Length: 144
Length: 171
Image (cartoon, rainbow over all chains, first blue to last red; front, top):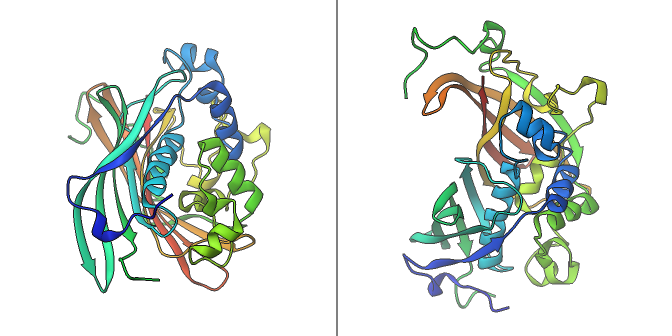
């Protein structure tokens, strides 16, 4: 895996997209790993009959973790996530293909650090389910 | 977006409003490698910084580090099953804010700034304040938007992360 450097990146560049289709197993493990007992993620009867959804829901925090994963995969081991923001705009259900990615909206040097601003989105087809932003720090060429 | 009008019922009880500005949760927990790795595989996030100490050391860290977004889970406590809400959720980390007229809860959004990495066995202290509770009118009706401001500090009193999170409650 080659390391992305600050000098490699320009406004408009794409964050390599990540495509995931969450299934019931992944939802179960995410609920377990986050100690989340909320029934809308595993109890279909509750989700449908009580809350009026067509199926159980993919966790908002799982979607945001997938969005952050697209970023940390893209920036490589020497990149650093400085800030990350995501908003739940619409629900997703297991079995739906979701794509997480974004693009560079700005690059700046601040106190010798190479900072890159990103506009992010978790999508299902054309629908944006989770808009977000992030700032990452990338190593400069010539740094150790 | 408008606040509550005459047509819409008031979804925010006064007891909830009284919590605005107050610290509603303080909690300390240990960062544990096995737990963050369980979280990472649930996300399908196999980044070697979270799993491979040699890789992490070759990239400037002292050891494997926790995924940045994991820090919020390091401080989770436990809830007796007979104290869960009917929907199975636990109010433990949000100050048990109750909105009887708006019982359907959904995570709103999160915005976090990361200042330092977390290592295995770090002790993280979370302090969470209610920043605001407002009623809004959306396309599908009135809802409550709750915003919390949270800081995470480690055992060396270093600020590890600061987060703003929100929750939506609907009738």
